[in-house]
Structure formats: structure tokens, C-alpha cells
Amino acid sequence: MKQYISLFFRMILAVPFFMSACSIGSSDTKVITVASKDFTEQFILGEIYAQLLEEEGFQVERKLDLGGTPVAHEAITNGEIDLYPEYTGTGLLTILKLPASSDREEVFHTVASGYEERFELIWLEPAPMNNTQALAMTQAGAQEFGIRTISDMVVHAEELVMVGPPEFREREDGLPGLKEIYGDFELKDYRDVDPGLRYQVLTSGQADVTVAFGTDGEISAYDLVVLEDDRNMFPPYQVAPVVRREVLNRYPEIEEILNRVAPLLTDEVMREMNFEVSGNQREPEDVARDFLVENNLTGK
Image (cartoon, rainbow, N blue to C red; front, side, top):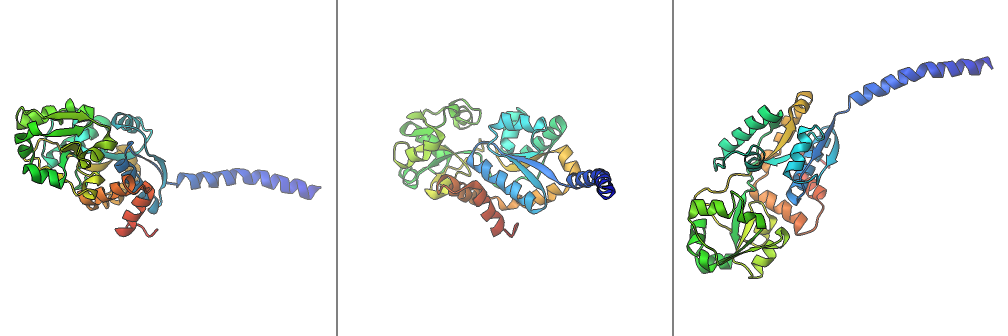
């Protein structure tokens, strides 16, 4: 009996040491929450960031498909998430509510300094890709009207049907902005369509021009002509991870890890990845993994 009592007391005495060891182990775990907004490109980028951080030893909690810009911004400023991909033009116009600019470097420095000063958020290195709004036509349509630039399109505006989201009628970088910069033109018609149907309507011949985004996968898939913004109306929408300063202070290596990705994300690369998901129905995590493997950023 004494032997069992002695063993019992030794077990009790061991519990604090065991708990202490567990506590030490858990404090060494690098946990970070990666989020994204609610559309295809964001899912892919969020997965790229998450998988790369996991490769470097982080435990990543994913909050992908979080919502639109206001939801994501509120979540990161409240400390509910640690980082997510954001666009410079969105930061400039939607969050900071500053005037539009077409100068990439100026826009980046403006949002970087504004976010750090107002929100204690840090912008990492921006990618060369530019998911700005754009106007696109089929090769046949552009050739028929002799259109390659937005100025060319304005000359033929009364002959053209444009499709796009309803908000393009009102946005500063939508029709009002185009008319201010390119002249007060009138289209034959502007038709509101669901974003998922824009390219179907265009390629079926029901419209001549569609509102697009620079990294839409359908641009490459359908060999569309993106009209040159020859008067630089559309602001740049380069993407970069936005990270809470507190998190970067704790894990400064995050900056070097995620900055490896930035120069690899060109318009063409992003278009191809987007179409793999939206066109070929692949999962964003699989497309992200392929990207990292192809660029020797992971061995998985």
C-alpha cells in the first residue's frame, strides 16, 4: 500500500512540471491568422501566403472568404486577423478616401504611410500585377471598329453596348471618371450584368465592351483586347500583404518570407491562376500549391 501511495504523490508532484512543459511548448508555437476577401483571386493569394508561412514553421489559422473590403479592414484593425491581401487603389480610394492617382509609386507610398500612421498596419512589397478596372473587347470587335485605346472607344461610343456591374455607372473610377477624363461621350447602351456573366455576354455577341479587371482569367482564356488607358484614368491596384505592426514586431521574418512572392505575381501569372479556379473549377489551395512548387518556394 505504501508503494502505491508513494507513486500517487510522485504523480501529483509531476503534474505542475508537465503543465509547465506544455506551456513552454505552446508559447514557442508561431500562430498567425491569414484572411482574404470574398472572391477568387483573394482565395488564391490567401492560400499562397498561408502555405508559404506554414512551410516556414508557422501554424496558420485561415479566415478566407471573410467578406468585402470594409469587413476585412475592420477585422484587421480589431486584431481578429493578422494579415490579408489588399490592393493599393482600394486602400487609397475606399479606406483612406483620397483622390485617385495613376502613379503606382506615389499611390503605394501614400497608402503605406497612411495605413501605418492611422491604423498601425504595414504594407509589404507590392506585386507588379495590377488588378485595376479596365475595358475589354473581343479581338473581332476591336478589329471591326479599329479600337485599341479608350480614346478610340470614345470615338465610336454611340455605336457600342457596354456591360458591367451597376456600380460602374456611379464610381469615381467608373463612367463618371471616364467622361471627366476622356470627354462627355454617350454609349449606345450600358447594361447592368452580374459580374459572373460579363464575359459570356461579351463573347456571345450581346455586347461590344465589358468592364473588366486587369487580372481576370477570362482575358487570357478568350484572348481579349484590354483597351489601353491612354489618359491614365484608372488608378493602380497592385496587391500586397497588409500586416498588423504588432505581428511584424513579434515575427519580423514574415516580411522576408512574403516578399519572396511579390515579384512573381504578374498580370499573366495571376490571370492563369484565376482561370484555373473560375474556368477549370480547381480548388484555390491546389492552384496556390502548384504556384509555390513551380517557383521553388515549397517542396510539397
